[in-house]
Length: 265
Image (cartoon, rainbow, N blue to C red):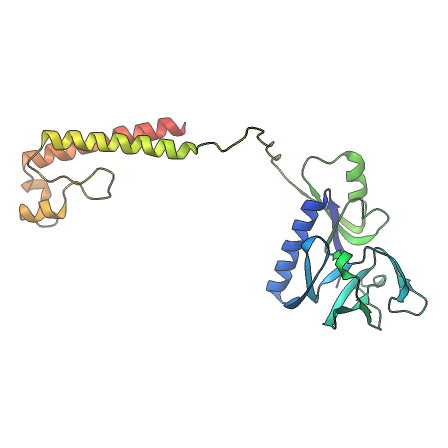
């Protein structure tokens, strides 16, 4: 595995969300087995195949090599989960020729995972002093140039930026909820349609009319059956009252369309 890490995330909340989504993708693709999980810090979860990062020193735990204790910032890969502990390997320096990730030959039990985090991304501050092959920085527009300098100088081969093109909208301090404008607009159009339909019914009290809000044709099936009309025969057998009604309905619908365009603009 090539050593690629996305260090450039400015805040812990966004970093945790990125970690969760990356892990979901790894579960979907297969490298991570979610059948048996352990709980990490801040409600995160990990299972066999996940990479986690240690957040506390443990001078009494040999981290895969004799004389090398577990240190804050060590990256671990979960090999198995048993007896309330994770069987892990510690990451070593990458192969200088291929860039492939290397791990300790010996595994060890790691029981302090409740303070650990997933290791797929870190904040820019945690990335200080680290070197990776490819660095990815997530920019939202709230970062300063000092932070960007750190995030953009972690990769030896490549440094890339994923930038938000639109700034986040500021929070509305007003209490309560606002009525959705689309609901008021829909109610207004419905009232117009009902009023127009009632006006047509008043001028044509004998004939059965379908509501304007429905997707019915200008001449309903009942009206076509009463007039004994065949498909395509409407052009030369339509009575005057049906032609007048169809024309009025078209005018009402055109008026409603104009109201919709005006409201959208």
